[in-house]
Length: 126
Image (cartoon, rainbow, N blue to C red; front, side, top):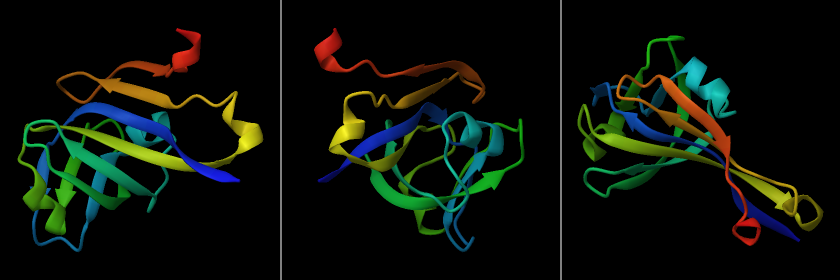
């Protein structure tokens, strides 16, 4: 059996740009993509902490070290510059992989610089 799990998330990212008439997607600083193991064109879920909006889109790389988090196309209607968002990527695991799997959490500061990278401890280990 296969099951979907959270693979990684970029937590408390600040939206830095919004480009309504772009063809669509979410631009993320490539350093942040690497830290969260998110690939170019990978599907992600996005949750806006400020307004509760949720949507799915795909990722394109932004300039390394820039802190760019840009909502493009229709996604630009889901948030405003300075809103905080959570960007989540997922993976499909088989039962044998589940026990040792831990998602990666990339926590950002106010400038979208990495504060901390951790994995999530399973609830049964707390």
